[in-house]
Length: 113
Image 1 (cartoon, rainbow, N blue to C red):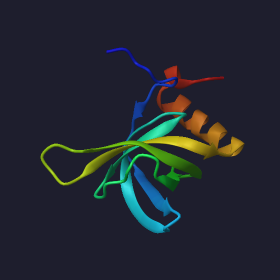
Image 2: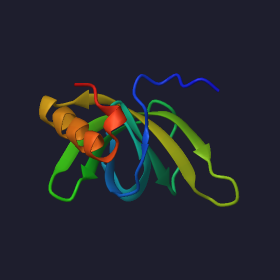
Image 3: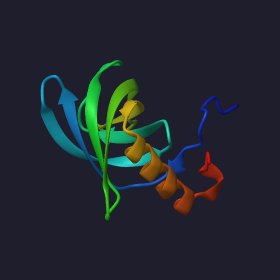
């Protein structure tokens, strides 16, 4: 299968804070992978395509903030959880730069510089 993404995803697992917009429903979850364009998350909740969320990624020494939009949401086989694909739709230059630096450290092939 051919990769259609502009940026490769890197398998990473860490805590992510999410706040559904405009409802302000806040929850924590974990990431499954990450790229410069988006993130895959595990969730106990189903979210329809197009749902917008504030996403906070804790990189230990920094917290990056993005606005993301659900691109897809699929039930995980064998349990009552969902995998969510998010595309970042609002990113500050500083968050984009920090994300790029982080991804370069853990996977040099990701660099766009």
